[in-house]
Image (cartoon, rainbow, N blue to C red; front, top):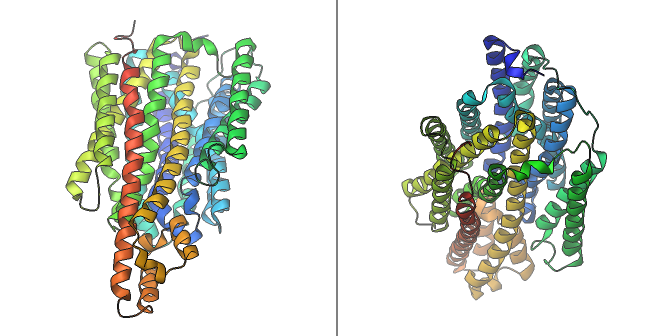
Length: 522
């Protein structure tokens, strides 16, 4: 079969790429908006112990959807699944925005994740469908630019919406924005004919993959928050998930039509890229989600202000992606060198973030964030181009989807683990920092409630309510209230530092993994 980019005119490729970019922009805009709004959502709905779950549920669902949608799109064409994915994404936005409990929000975010996973999977593979290998670098960089612009606009827009209206509208706005994009997909996305061949579907592989991902991610989300790591609930889910993963590998090794062929891992570049992706993206989603919490809860900025602090991450990613794309074109595709340098920048940026506290200046914090963003943008661009240019054309779609699959697996695992680190370390630091004199004002139950949901640091009305409660304790009440709030502030700042320290340690291993990248395309 002729390669798809050879069947399309330049105008068709440009229109198709434009539609792909719009769909990706919308999915990214919604995904990144959540970080800014989460402190306010938690203050409204409760559930601080499940702070990361609304993001994790999206990532878990998207992770499961990506390889399945990728295989189905290989059979039936990408157009129908682009339309289906965006339709699911738009439809799920309505109940997500109308959620009354954290449980409802988590469930509807998972449904959104299915649609988002389908969109992202098709977006990544579209570059290989539309353009020859020598052109892909700049278009991968272009998708990175779209991702970064949406990720910059998302948190700021979410902050403005949250402060001026309601957090519900960060989801509901997807309807008026998404319907025109959906119509453009139907109108302009070409019906590219799938390659002939085995069109069977690996149902056992789909089932075991789903069971493995969901079981492990749920176990990681529960561990350290609701149950101990050694508890039957967590240990049982982990054991079941690992067993399902083993069964999945066995099934894929014998399947005539695997959804994730094991042969691609024999390619050194793919294997190294998967490892580097997993380790670096462990830090990406955690940084995006927890940075607004630091600025709102520790430094007292508004939702709009904290969202603006995510802008340097995304601008750094844009610059890093563009620079790496240009260097790949001009220096003979030195994948190893670029991967080592970029992962080193990510590690350095995360370490510097771990040193932040209440006294950290805004410009200083922005500098740390930019360093991390530069490295992350360069890393993702380098790995995407390296994989697409070093596998046979017949495996480009599968290899690209696999890379994105592990990016989301890592993100979901990182959010689950880091969420547990944050809640347990915050509780421990509160016990250490809160003076005993507060015990005469707050009961043990009231203090435990604040550990589970530090609303007093995120919601001005809750802060004033706490001050009023302390004022009733006598003349010394006002001083005790400020002492207590300062202790909570320090505890949350320390917990955030612990989160970034763990993240930097994990991402640091990616530097070693990058050394296994091949130095060039051959």
